[in-house]
Length: 126
Image 1 (cartoon, rainbow, N blue to C red):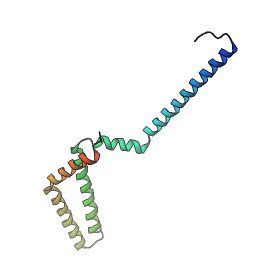
Image 2: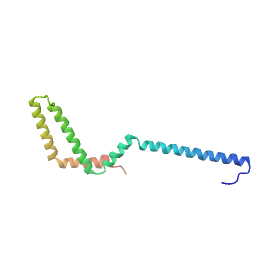
Image 3: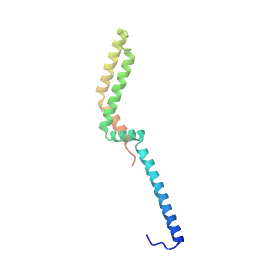
Image 4: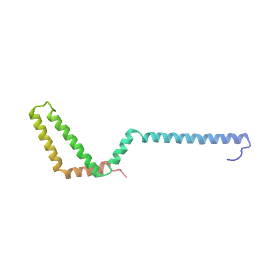
């Protein structure tokens, strides 16, 4: 910094330092908002999902798991739980084996669906 000899130079230097301080304060606020957004739970979850869907293999496993959860839910609703009659339990068991058979017999369909999802939904647009 240069030597200040007059009060005008002192006032100019003070104004210059105040402007620099305001600019740095604004930059600090912007960085704080960005940091808060980065650690927002929704953004963290979004980043985890984007990272986890990085390959068709993971999407295929997610799709199989979703189908399994769906089939368990449907068969649970059909069978009626512990206090249902024998007919509903048998129907639930048949439905469960049918859904399992559909999943195992159509593995290529699941793979093609997962590849489609990977290429058209989860792949980042360049």
